[in-house]
Image (cartoon, rainbow, N blue to C red; front, side, top):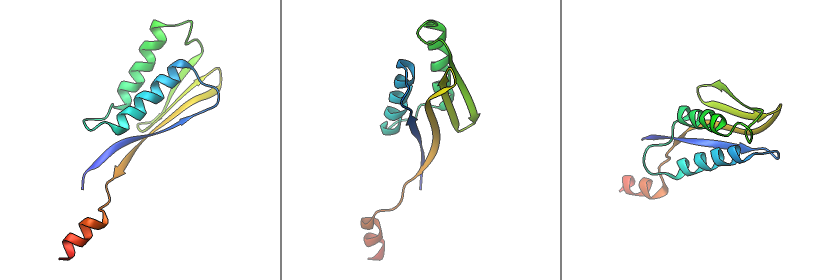
Length: 101
């Protein structure tokens, strides 16, 4: 049984263009058949985007809670919370029926 990394994304009412882009990146990574985008790469994307567009992204702070948890906030208000989870692929009923025969 293979485990796949997925992201649980929580978008808060106050948001920004950067937070929306990161949420979209995480959601697309969840449905991607290849390798998922690592949380370190997402962190790098936020950092670089803040350097390129300092006026638009002013006050945005990225906090890494642990190796599986990232929070993006702006001026003390949370914009986005990302948590990397391991998705377990459970066998379907068809698999059980085939193994019974």
